[in-house]
Length: 88
Image 1: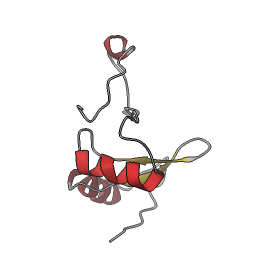
Image 2: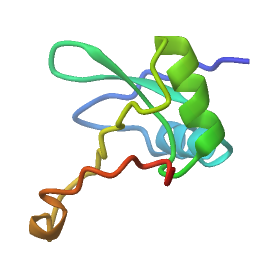
Image 3: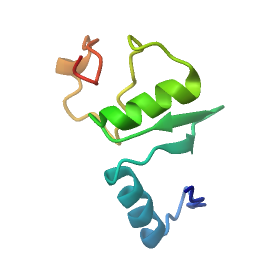
Image 4: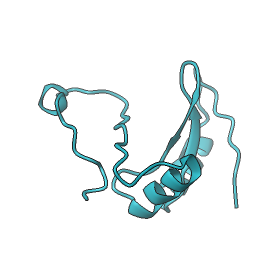
């Protein structure tokens, strides 16, 4: 089952943000707009969701995922982190 949310970038609706977060917490994957393209994401460490993304995009098991977060307060220690997020 898929759900479609339109969340305003300048004034996000709290109810829709909560619903989208719930989908991610429950193992869902999301497609979200980046500056010039769309990206596919999931919860950090969710192996099944990562496998679904690999299948959708026809990626190898060795594919690295990008860590996306709101802000890097202490990003220097992670600067050279290149391990796969799946823990394999």
